[in-house]
Length: 413
Image (cartoon, rainbow, N blue to C red):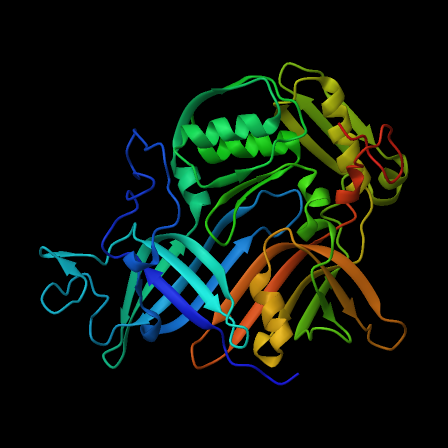
């Protein structure tokens, strides 16, 4: 397959309107009911011709961690002071004598595949800071941005969630935070009613996700996603490998494997609010690696049975270490199909990685979940993409349709 060109980036900034238009009123106590659909493309100015570099990072580093806010930077040529907030005379982004180079402007980045012309979302968020640099010969202005998870962390909510499935509670928190752009699973866990008083919307959603053993994150189009624990098993993009990287398939630039002990958990305790501690242990793991505890407290679960099953699930997945592919780096310009696979990837997609161990022997193949995505693009230069992974073995613990605990199957409740 011949090398392909870079994808055509479109970096749109909504200079004329702040973050409160069709969305959050940042810093106020009265949030609008609607966050709104993504704005019409016409209200965004494409600054791609001035882009010197673009990079972004979304996801989390490790299983059992929460997903972090996605973030990124776009560095713009500022030799003509087009992106200088102090240039109120000749600057193109000035209205009524006030600069429009401000934090709080929305940004959306898309990439058009160089051979298929399919447009993929890469990032949708809000510019948080502008950084100007000059050395007397050159000048740049860098927009630093992040996604809706940052706004959830900045937004206080006071809400009493229902005694219901976890998805109901998640939607109640999202509604209290003024969010309409979300996708929320119904949830599997049954939760007790819980009062959140002036807590951040992010903390409340993460409490719900921890009780569910699900996930909260923002996708590449800016939607807040609330996944149940079964989403990783029921959604096609997560239960079926979407592509194969590695030996004899989509080429890899570099690969990192690890065989670490930090994820070993052999004494797991889960306690719901008002309930008794439920602990699962594995004697063989303790004897081999020493006691390694993991504690979940104040879970919103409605009964101790669910807490016990959660502890058993985590123990089953993390009592032993495993050699796993931790991350890969690829150069999408080298392969049209690789470019497609890279641009199409979302957090929690299932993919396959194959690799040939040094010294010979059979190739090794692992199916993995995408936990982190990084892209770095320099127009008229290079593109590099890095994916961080978690093993699919831990997800198999939630056995859909099963009724008993076992070595490879955990109670589905």
